[in-house]
Image (cartoon, rainbow, N blue to C red; front, side, top):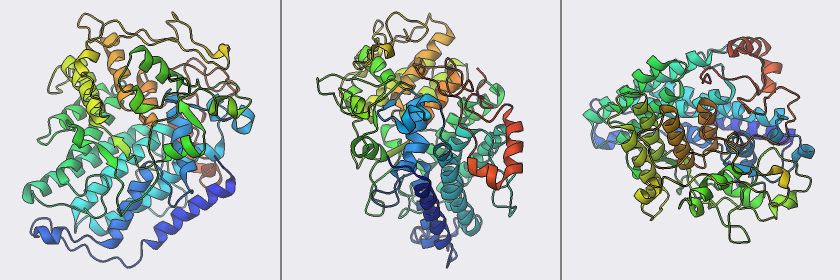
Length: 536
């Protein structure tokens, strides 16, 4: 990875120029959703479509051109959620080993997620709203869903954000509490779902923005399912801090007439096409940068469970086995771990980036059912459906029932072939999970919750951002703590990192706003302060 201040500045300039160039020569979107023909409804405006593409490309940052921009994904996703969730382990020793992996958080790294959200997502949504809110509300609704998908990732990284009044012309933006942001998300999703449901009822065969939609190719019913599923995800996220609101929103999502994702084909992912060509950033980070490998926790769970998804997620090492790297360790020589017997991520350059997969949705519903919410089925059935769906999504041919009927397999001990001091021996109940796979009707609610979250964690790979959020919310699965903690006491090794600090650029350009944000956060602006929903 090559990260410099000039690289970051150039990348932000590219985004700014993209936004400025796309605002010229708007034409009215000529579709009336209540009277138009199917042909008219597929006549997409070029400028609106360009902004929609811009938004899709920035939910998970992808390179804007070959060999430029994958480091943004690396610093905003891979060296954050991907490692903090236990999914992956870093091979490199940036800044002599004092970096994000060891909790010495690098400002020019932790500001990237903020920059992408407020340069790549919010301006595009604002431009689409201006043109389509009344003339083509179905397009406005789709853009709003993308906005919520992107911005919930941002608030789940930082906490308070200048969200509710974005683009009001103020030179300095007021930050909003995470609670207010989440409540706004629910309102926005409800509005988008209502618009798209009405549109689909009136025009059941019509699509919208199909030429520019690289997620569902304009399929309205698919967008409704995704929006309901996203609403369910956000509802579960606030289950500890706002249980009544969480139940209301979750039941509303699941019991909507079109409902949530249920089949492998419902997956929300950024497709490759002639109109959008990109290399999956994880492929570049693993193969070209040589900076990432399998995480130690992934080795522990997948080998311990003899999980058939293991070869789908990672490549065997030189000895034919699977080996992961523990995070927060001393790495004096990159070659020790980059060239050692550690497993690479099994991902191709042309793999799509997954925003949300239907297996996750089953596990969300399983947790809701465990909480006695109306999720359309019982917790065990939904849990087992989540495993079956994960097998289907990943092309696993093994019998899922054989897997989820296993009542004895537990996560394996971990051994680092380079440094024994990084090992996790068994038994070690403080650090090493003993959760089994098979549903246990006699187990406590908490034990079955651990079972649900552990399988959800496996199924959501490689979206470490979401896995990290769920670890912070529930404490599951058990993620190995760092060995080296360079936070100077700001981050508790046992509790692990809870968030990223606000972008350093905000202290330079919006000092009043970001100072107020610290008060809304309810604690110091550092990696040890929990977010609003992090109250378990």
